[in-house]
Image (cartoon, rainbow, N blue to C red; front, side, top):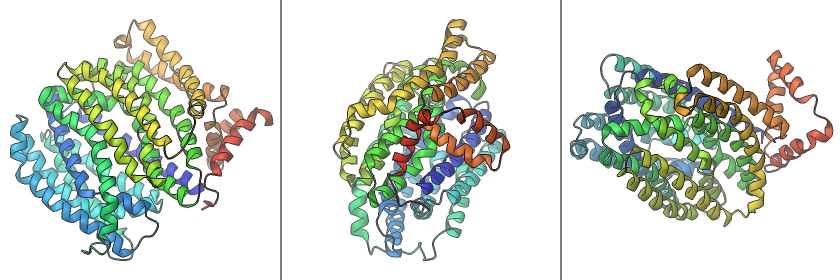
Amino acid sequence: MASVRRGIFLSTAERYGLLVTNFATTLITARLLTPSDFGIVVLGMSALSLVDIFRDFGGCTYIVQTDKITPQRVQTVFTISFLLSLPLFLFLFFFSGELASFYGSEQLKSYLEVSAVCLLLTSFCAPVYSLLRRDLAFGKIAILSLSTTLLNSILTIALALGGFKYMSYAWAQLASSIIYVVFCYVWGPQFPIYRFSLADWRRVMSFGIYDSGAYFLNHLADSAPTLAFGKTLGVENLGLYFRAITVSRLPERFVLSGFVPVLLPAFSKSAREGGDLKAAFLFTIEHLTVLLWPALAIVALLTRPLVEILVGHQWLATIPMIEVIAASFFFCFMMNLPNPLLIAAGAIRDTVLLSLLIVPVTVAIQVGASFLGLQAVAWSFLFTNAYVAIVSLLVLRRRIPFGWHEVGRALKKSAAVTAMSAAAPLAAVISAGGVENVTIPAGLLAGCAAALGWLVGIVVTRHPILGELERALSAGARAVPAAAILRQFTFTKRTSVENAPVVTTARAHENINPSAGD
């Protein structure tokens, strides 16, 4: 359990570093690029990410979850990845003109040509990254991600200031991809990775068919509507839509980004050692929602101050969309959990079933809504996200039996904390006469009050996250005197009877993986 907590801490630190870096980039480039420029970037990134799914073919996930790692298996994963990357690179590079013509944007051609080279380089990075994840080496992953992302951001901003517009993203991505490859080569294992071998291709391919099928369908749920919107809404409206998604997903990225990279390695390790996956699932949603839901409530209520601070006045048209989309993301606590749990439980085929049940419905609803305009697309998220959460729970119960009352009990305290956190932002909205009228000073004041409300909420409800906070503050007290003061103020007045529910929950989770003491 100690290694998992350390992994979550390092992963969260890494992701927060990435978010801060990306925010800085967004703050500047949002004021340098027009919605049309940004729409080209969105189309290019969506096309690249969709093609990249076929390049991986489940190899990275296979490395993380397999019971034994051998040089032949890793070399097989690299070989398959490279052999799939080469034709995809050729397709994206030489047919970029046709794709640009389809969307009526000739500028897209040059963006796709540079992105195609990045795709080819990725096949050299994936095996090493997967080995680091398997070993829970999130310290190295943090250095790798933060350094290359910082380089990417600096180059993007410099090129945008130099007038490269949308191409500033493409050239910066190419440069950072080259540096990423160098890091992976240096931090690779002792045995050679970059050798062509198909010694274990049957095992890798049989796993990859299901994993890539599920991942492709899941990714299609994101990228297919985006690619369709480029045609139905136009490039400029696509830029507005994606900027609204970016702001709406701030809580998800801040809260879930630190957990998601750890989920599959942690669940897989727990399963290999006979751990209780149901307890791990309930523990995870209980701790995720107490962080995610209050943050989403703040974004939905304090939308205008956030937009003005983060991206500027030219994006105020996104406010009505952000209000609705942020509210729909209350269901997102389930979106990243089913697949890692199902894979850890040995039910890789169920991930494909889940995707088949989800993707056609969500894509059809969102693309259909795009013919009615941007706001209709925003409202479609309420239906699709709720549908995804319900279907995910139903499929997950087939392999990891849990009661609906257990899920309700795990979410009850988080809902109460969310209500306490949202009280001040809601008062600010009512006082201003609507979300669109909240000023930046009022928003900052309400945001600080919401943070205080969250702290009061977790203490009053005795939410289990208090046990994790106490552990973190205890560790920090040795290095930071202020942490000791805060710990004493927060926890010393809790009697042994009051402390019992928190301690019980924390210990129950530790028993999920009793042998993990490293």
